[in-house]
Length: 328
Image 1 (tube, rainbow, N blue to C red):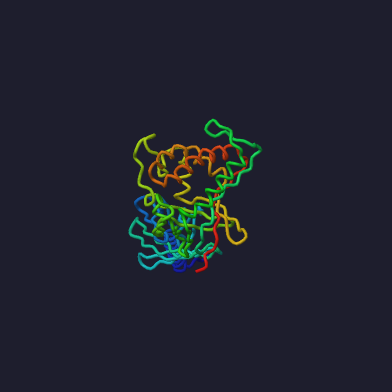
Image 2 (image 1 turned 90 degrees about the vertical axis):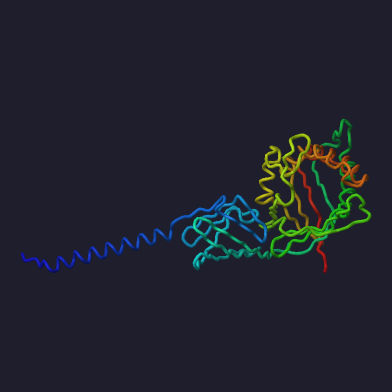
């Protein structure tokens, strides 16, 4: 049998060439699919002008996953294009469009997300009332050692709830997903109101189904509370156990229920969300001393123990705002 050695050498060369080509291709693909995680000091995230620390982003090939970027979303995925150090992408659904711009600098990633909300909540809403709905089998509740009829307690809360308009005039859910509230700064003289708009960059919203998720920048809203208990209790205390879970939701997305009603909408929370607040609310009352008008302060100090008792005695509770659209 005759073997052509020259052809055998050529076959060896071709085999080596294909092997090297395959190795190069494999390495290049592996590099494209390499996963890079950015978090802590290696990630900055701004969403419609609000900075959200403590988030995480994972880049795998052309897919960037940003965790808890938007209120109520565990993660948001972007298929990104890259030009040098810059990346860009978009994620959209029926309620919003999110445009991403970012810069990769070594092991650091700077992200800016611009949100354009498309839901029916994008509007300016007039605050009509603060409401409390309670279902309970009890006819009476105990408030500060006295028996109070449930019907009487609810009637008093309804009267107070209508007056909430003297504290807050409107809430605007803006197209860029910011929330702006018009509130009265002259709370000691409610009959001489001075309404101002809260600055943008305080709160962000995102509509998902029949809920609206709200995330807040607590560092801007409430100064870091370092005063020990019980001298002062502030809602910004993320280390205060009864509110720890609630504070976490406020930072990442507090779920509020949405309900369409005749002429407007109701935004409310239920008993499960209220219970952590109820356990601490009476301790906040001393902070009101001298901060409100004497009438308002008296009403709140009377109503808070009633509300706590009503929630504790209820099988179902709804606390929220009735909002009416504003015609500009």
